[in-house]
Length: 176
Length: 195
Image (cartoon, rainbow over all chains, first blue to last red; front, side):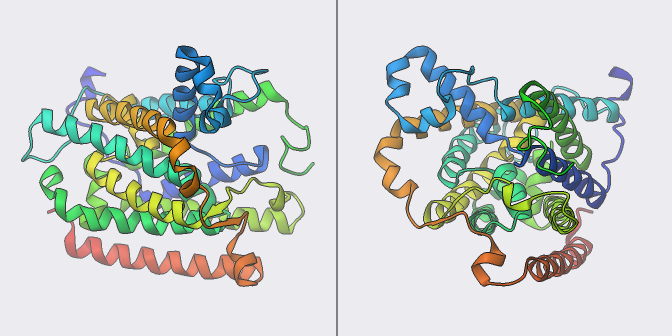
């Protein structure tokens, strides 16, 4: 890893990567009859955690139960959980090949590391509410539902861009 | 042999999980290749400095959309058997707005925060921790917001069904819209690119 750190390779063309990602999504439709996702796997992890701490508390909540199933299969033996493990591996492989894997903090030049951590954390909490309200994230709703011409997914996607553009002016110091 | 293979029993439970891992590796690989493991690149979309997010997202969407249309046309894939998330207008519109705010504050979306973490971004890892905590809080207050969560239910509905248009025409309209978006993105980038 060390020899490449100072000189990472350039990113690939976004249209080429988009076609690649689109074919991955198409293969998922063809083989599984479902799309890809990300936040769903995180929800499985949280629901499993809650169940481990208090079985009765988790079972009284229909939201958690939707991710825990009927108990015949372990809730982490789930299609999306395996897919997201793959995302971690695939991201690592690509970053490694391009010489981009190193411990780093991504932020604008005007804020401190601690403030960046705080905003990354708070942004995650806010985004979790959005994704759970909408029943999916950029992967499960925008990409998957977008390709299926799903009405709710397109509403989510348009609202997502609107929300981010409306907020961008207020947090400019984080990035620029 | 036609799809979805899993629904027709062509592949079993264990093979489907192996396939999930493979699909995930390819998904993560393409996200990182395009630079979407970088919060600076992701956030630049919303300052109109770098349109990679839009370009990659909509290229992927129309690629898969055209693929589903033709595979269905040739009888190789029963598109109506692919799972559709039901539409609930209000939680999905409000959820989208909230998600967008969280995206620009945190710098990642859930999938890209995983890619960022895998490539060593400490802020990406903090974002994942925030996501997990936020999902827990959402789960805990869920019994009180269940009414809103199911507001504006329209069932499983697609644009062709909603507008009463043939699928092929709807695909054509969305592809043209995306191409116009790509043209606009190139123009915006040429004006605003980071020097």
